[in-house]
Image (cartoon, rainbow, N blue to C red):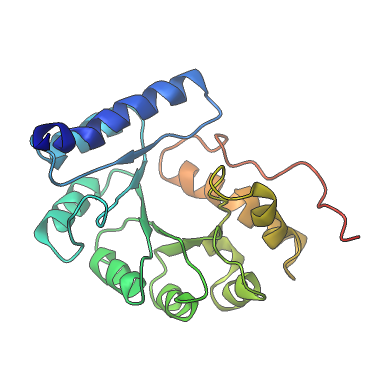
Length: 219
């Protein structure tokens, strides 16, 4: 059972590549687990050869800590590869830890699951560390989007929905009805992700287009 569990991350990456090959509108995201028996270097190299540039880590689910040497080993192997790293903000302090530990590796970071309980910290972190960006999937309270746009700029926000687990329309409405300019809205919906992926070696057209439909009526 343990040996089987240690192989789940790399097996999942194989499945992800297969799905993305059948559906070219998708951008594949790999995950790296430092428990992998053959080490992270081989798996990172395999993913990079396959064209993957987005990597998401799951420290809590995979039972490891960011403040450990294996995380720095992952960062060392991703440095200079045009990779983009995605990490969830799980509690107060997480964003600061992520930003501080990744500051010297020249890797763009996208903070996921940012919401009102740690918005102030994420805001402060993004103001200090320009390599840190944020997803919008859980910016659910009034003025969350406007606050970040005002303080760090719309170019640091990437649209997220968590669909199909969460309603897609709620995530869309959050951006449609934010008090930001049309240019900033378009950047959040897809322009920023396209730019980030294109700058870091991934296809800019895959899965990042802004919605074509007009925002739903308020009535």
